[in-house]
Structure formats: structure tokens, C-alpha cells
Image (cartoon, rainbow, N blue to C red; front, side):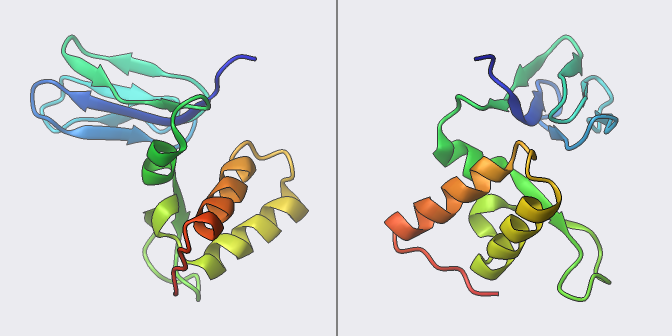
Length: 131
């Protein structure tokens, strides 16, 4: 089985910025404009001559995936500024709602398996995160 990109993440060797491309056409450039990444979780398109590829793949350790895989949200009322929250910091209620939504509306979403893994991880490690 071919490994899938889970998090498209690059560190610029010049300015130290860490760039995350979150979706297919999310072109992100560092502050010194010497490194970029694009492609989100669909493909890696990295440019520059001094960078470190910090991307995570489906065969990466889950402890790293839960640290860097994030979900965007606009708060409970949907009116807040878009904020990306790492899987490890999402509240249990939010995580459960995301799972329900994905099961119903996008059952083939490749991230659903990581949401399940996070719930199992929390159960096995007695972790509960309140809103």
C-alpha cells in the first residue's frame, strides 16, 4: 500500500519558518521568500534550496500525527475567526461531532481513521478534553 500524505509541512533552512499547506491549492511561502510548499495532503510541491521536509505520512508514528494533524473550526456558533486546532487539543465533544459528521457526509474521508485512532488513544490513556 502506498503511503498517503497526512500533513504537508516544511521548515525553511534560512528563516526557520515552518510552513503547512492544508489543502490542494494552499501555496505557502516563508517570510524570507526562499522556501515554499503547496499541495496540502494531495501532493508535495516544495521549492527552495535549503529546507527540511517535516511532512507526515500514513506510516508516521501516531504520536506525531496527533500533534500536527489539525482541523479548522470557527467556534460553536460558526462566527469566530478560522482557527486550526491539532487533533490532540480538540475537545472530546468536537471530535465526536466531527466523527459523526464525516461518517454521515464523507465516509471516505482519509482522515476519519485518525479521528477514530484519537478516540481510542484517549480512551486507552484516560484523556478527556472539555470544551
